[in-house]
Amino acid sequence: MTNSASPGGTPSGALADLDLTPCPGCGTVAEVSGGFEMPGLDGTERYVRTRCMVGHVFVGPEFALRTGFA
Ligand SMILES: [Zn+2]
Image (cartoon, rainbow, N blue to C red):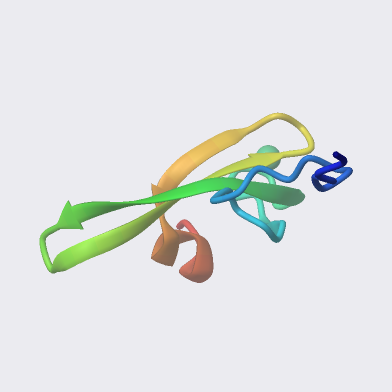
């Protein structure tokens, strides 16, 4: 009885596709390793967690990544 599971062992429910974004700290490529939603002032805000190649870990609202940090 061979119930073939996926060879890669992709965890179901996890982020399937890898999202890349410029690191807010240094501008190099950062990987979006997670995301969650938090209640904000204007409703639910989406937060993301990124980690760049240098090692900066950023957790913040998604719009901040899109618009960039000043
Ligand atoms: Zn960085």
